[in-house]
Length: 302
Image (cartoon, rainbow, N blue to C red; front, side):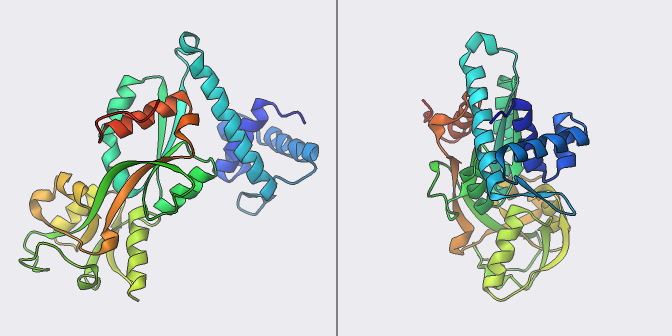
């Protein structure tokens, strides 16, 4: 078998984009050339790698296996570049980090300091539900992830990141749970909500909890950011469930009332995860250490 690095990089881009057209564009190749390379790999292996659909592609089991090995090779090349020390100075490195909504709201400060100190490293931050983060890390589709411990993290190495408390926010003059210091989800499930956009990790989690109660949430509006949700709540549009730390950091916090949710599922321990911290690229190790040190006193990465 003869796969060159262009073939493997193209296959990674096609798999991540779910499209040969988009994968070719990311790789800087013409569509015809990219299609011919994919077909050539399939003919060499004697097995289909992608299933061509009307809208994009899906990986076959053989394609999933190749994706795993292609990512491994990519990481080994990045490790080699890092190990070359002075010779690697000036080369850019890319680290893919996945985080749930709560973690993503805490990462901008950490990432800004890290990126300023490491101008040769680029970080791709993607917000995903915790169970999806666990799955993608296990499949080698990301370097690092921060997920809630209720997800299936058993096959991953983990280090504590922080504790996330979800809270209900309402306008300052709201009569909801007046005088209370916490509130149960069942007591507010019928209220009008300000939600986050479709596919948002936190929003999916809350909708799932409502389904356990046999209820559907009434969303008056859905917005893209936690800050926008807090602002709409402050203006009396409805209530929202957001990470308590994000609610208190919001510019609208002075005009909102914040009540922690007392349900067990509303208090989550967030874990920094990797398939193996020891086998991360040097750049991913640096990022892992920076994230860990943001909330802990000593390093865990050797």
